[in-house]
Each structure stands twice: as C-alpha cells, then as structure tokens.
Length: 111
Length: 113
Image (cartoon, rainbow over all chains, first blue to last red; front, side):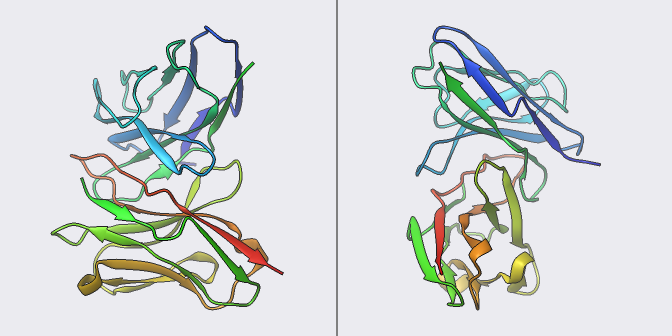
C-alpha cells in the first residue's frame, strides 16, 4: 500500500544527544515536510523540501537539520542545540496541488 | 505563501447540535483548500477538499464545506455532532511545487453529551 511511514512512534533522548527521526514515502511525491506540534499550538513548519538534494528552512528550523538524498526519504535530526525538543513530530508529503499526506507521527521525549 | 485563518481555537457543541468550524483564506487567486482531522496521538487525515468545480464539497463522517469566493471562506459544517467528532481540525491550502504549506493553529472540537 502507498503511504508515508514515520519511525519510531516513540523516542526518548537524553539531554545533549542528537536523535534522528525517519520519514519514508512511496507515493512518488516531490514535496516533503516536517512539522512540530505542541499542545495548543497547531503545526509549526520546521523544514520542507520540494526536490531531491534541496530543502528550505521553515519557521522554527533552529536546532534541527534535514537531508533529502532520495526522493522517498526525508530524515529529521534533532540536535543538542534544540533546547526544548519534547514534542510530537509529523512528516508529510504532497505534490502539485494535492493534499498533504501525513505519517502517524513520532513523539519525542527528553529524559 | 497562501495562508488560512481559523477563527476559534476551541469550539464546544452539544451532541446532536450543528457543528460550524470557520476557515478564511487570503489569496488573490482562489486556492485549493483542504480540511483535515486529527485524533489524539495520530497524524492528520483528509476530511474533504475543494479543487475546482462544485463549491459545496462533501467529506467523510458527514462533514461538508462550502467554498465562497466572495467571502474568501471555506467553513466546515456537520448538521448533527457525534461524540466521535471530538478532535482537532485543520484547514490548509494545497501542496505546491513552489511554496511551503502553512497550517493554521487548528480548532479543537469538544462534543458535550
């Protein structure tokens, strides 16, 4: 089945560690997005990519990094520079005036 | 970037009452518009979409929305709320090849028995 997969569903990080969240899609979509969701704040855009080997910062990119080496994959690294990383992270993909297709999310907790 | 505004971060309705969630868009060119629903600890699911053609669109779970160019609105409605409708709802423009997709803050819907 076509879709977008995020892993892991739950992730725990010690302070000072970098962690990488996986996002894979087999929908042949050009565009991929990472959002952060905190209670009562909706979805905030971290990074997005419209094409392989290119990506742009969103509204809250500080402390995060991404790569887009393959069309299907758009991993997000939460670095130690992100001071408040505990949140729900959502990955999405889309193309040419379509809706966004979302993964099931990764809940990251700093311990 | 195309943007949307959702009025009301939280809406409460009684079971069986009308649901009305508001969305206004800003763009000189009518965009494609979408409503999504999010249940706790899950990703967003498409509820319905407006692309071209009929301005009244029907979605899943009995929801519908009407695209009104004169009002730049795309409000979501359901005639009779059910307990299972309690969720977070987001209005958003389409993915494009040239721009980012900005979501509004969403509207949290509570249904009171």
